[in-house]
Length: 287
Image (cartoon, rainbow, N blue to C red; front, side, top):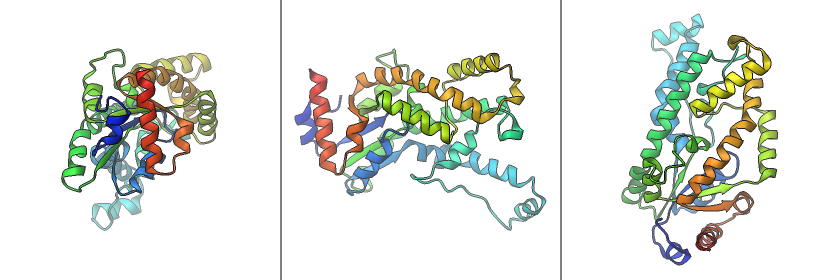
């Protein structure tokens, strides 16, 4: 690891960390808290995906829908209007809207073939964005003069890592650049995430093998045809299974770094709180 103990971490004039864990447990909160100090460069993987690797796909999809409306079609063809996405750190809706939900088009779903194509586009984009971490870490210091660096990953990072391979190329590369920090939740956090998701189900990215099993199991259990699945019902049905699938994967990833608890993250108010929290995690790792 980059920092072998608390002393080395606290003494480092350049701190680099990579947050990972379930979405909704505080990765972005912690990143925003540190960024607001002016000392930390915040590299958001989801933002990079939405602006660099999937930006054109997102805009083209919006144009495709707009072309169905004669009034907008004429304006687009005459270059009288243009369409762009407004991806920000706080608003990643264009990415999730493009990913969509599988199921009946009449209910806002996407045909399964198209859905799987977009899932593969996202997988490829996220891996590329993760591969860019070293470039942005160096750029943050060289170009902007930032002392410290945060890589704020998406919840699906664990789907692309071979967690059973201690020499997984992507995780090895990332852990040589940053200290991986797993934000771990407990059963209460999981229940809260499921409850929140049930109220407002949002598109997700899934490991292909996991998704296909869920899709087949759902069709068998409900008797629905592929083009008759209610998209919100399906992703609600899948969500808790996705969390259970990811939890042990995060835990295996944690051996490349340290673990902190979501409740501790929620109580962070200043940079020194974070420094102390990582120092404690490094000391606990040694025991």
